Length: 107
Image (cartoon, rainbow, N blue to C red; front, side, top):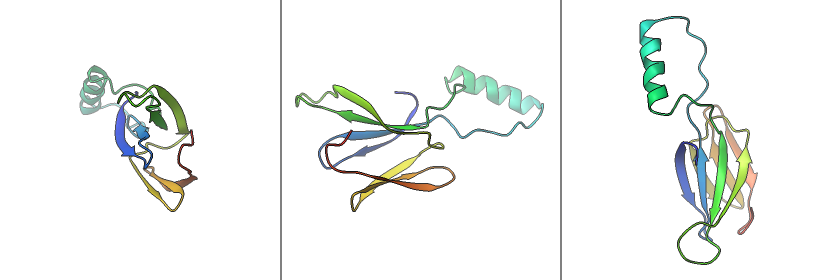
């Protein structure tokens, strides 16, 4: 998983994982603070392109280990929260709340 930020367990036991690094930043020009922050982020493994997706993990044989991994949604903008309500999965991006139709067992 690429920078998992949020987990959500669905009614059937599937687990959704919001994978994101950090929202894109505008170029602030040169500053010593930016140089040191960029270095710290790089050392922490956070200086990579953000996945910006929701991954679905499923345990098909009941052993407690996910053996299916699929992309549920992609092209998001730094997703950080999810909830399921009335057949829709709501995802909080940094700039919008988006909804996806969902039915139990879907991949």
